[in-house]
Image 1 (cartoon, rainbow, N blue to C red):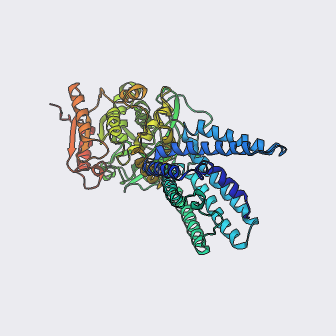
Image 2 (image 1 turned 90 degrees about the vertical axis):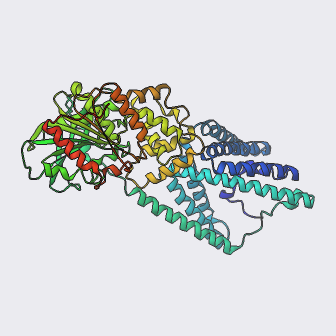
Image 3 (image 1 turned 60 degrees about the vertical axis):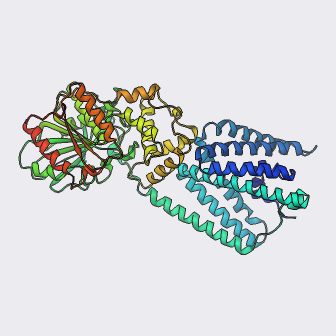
Length: 601
């Protein structure tokens, strides 16, 4: 009689539900098998539904296992079987009540289960022949490795688990059909059931163990490489004991050694600002000036960066490209024209606080207060005139900074605002994204907005997210777009969105719709406004931008609108893009006080 090891006991627990059909009539096996196989195929391509089904399956198995213990308990066996049975029933009910509704803990649950089963397998090393113990050790070590990976990458883990559960369900259904057909031919279900004592070919077991160990090791290595790209914060971004209550005050500065455009030198600065809700906070930025200025004082360009994530560690000043030729326009024009630049990280990146992703007040204030703080750096002779540039999310920030300047920062002399491929209409973007949820990167944008809005606005919470997608949203919000792990977020989001929408309610209605609407910048602007857009932009719809410009023109806001044929979202910033020369000349004209042409009819 084979030894019932701890691993086998645990395995029987989680397989209690399928065991109920083991001795059913052959036609019942075929019927259940057909239904189960079809369900498995459906679940394999619908991850959110698969995860919900897995939560129900796990809970039901625990309940059935516990009830089995209670029914089979014999008189005089003591309290242990009673306690064990009740414990499994309670655990199953908890899973059904908790994981069945909100699957945020399913990833950690899977990780814990893998670690537990791996540890139990390793305990089995005390039982059986040497070869069996070695195989058990190999599989146990693999499960421990996969458990560690599941803890590090819960969103990808859930997707894999969902897929495997669907495939496993389909395979189980097919096996029931085969057993039912065989039982019908032989006249006895028992004769159709495969022997549980039959030993698999030893060579096949060793091959399987080797493959699993190899995959587990490779997964750990890839996981470590992915995590190696995560930026690390340092003490520069920590708040001092005494923080000035006035916005735009310089706290500290230190040299910045990033990949600067030729002819520039830079400092990283920490300064005070104001969050969207009016609460004082801190933000960081990089200030760059010509190493050999051609004239003094130096005019200042305020740069508002595009989407890099919403996590604190995503601050561009933590990396080498806060001010560089990578993803930024007309960088050669800075030293050539004797211009300086201050590039804010916004509040909540680098520093503590809620990052204002597509939240205009927080973005705009961070930009304007960076200009104020730059003027306080010792040794810098900056002119009063400032021109604001921004791309993508930064275009939205630039529009808001220009709109807020007369009231929030009247001491900042804004000579012009350039919004490039700007996320100018968050509400309109929400309509497009939700109508095409399977688009590449759509889930990432949804995750960033939901995370930022739920942290900032008291009337918005993560309850608007589908329970099975909350882990995806939370993990996306914890990563930066420069991290290799973001690829997992995008692919997971595409797979998930083809099943069920990530959001359970229409984001254009209710509190979310109201907040998106109030973050559309509608002016007025006291400085000349330039809006630039690529005709092939795959992120910001050209039609949406055209509608936004038409709306501003209809409201009487003069502006210049430039469209670049064949240029996509990042293509407008490439070195050969005509935008670079246009932006340089436009900035020269703004600093010289040349009147701007109006593109509005």
